[in-house]
Image (cartoon, rainbow, N blue to C red; front, side, top):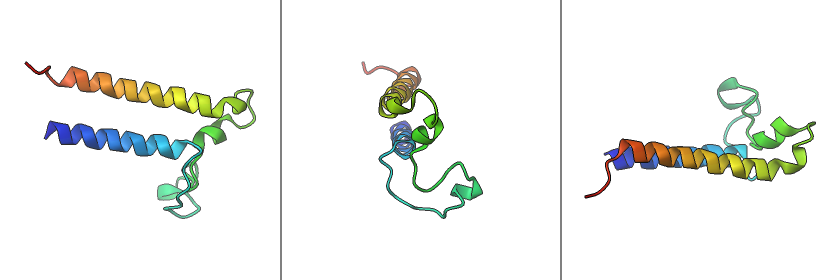
Length: 87
C-alpha cells in the first residue's frame, strides 16, 4: 500500500511539474482558471509567466529543470526516510 501511495505522489508531482513548464498544451479547464483561480490558467507555462519582465526570463527552461530536479530529489529523500532498507 505504501508503494502505491508513493507512486501516486510521484505521478502527481510529475503532472504539476509538467503543468508549470512551457510544454503543457492541454486545455482541460475553462479560461477563468482551475477552480476559479485566475493564476491557474489552462495553457500552463507558469514559470515563463512568473519570470516575464525579469532578467531571468531567458533562462526559463534552465530554472524549470533545476526546480524539477530539486523537487524530485526532495521526494526521493522523503521516500528514503519513510521506508526501511531491504535486508
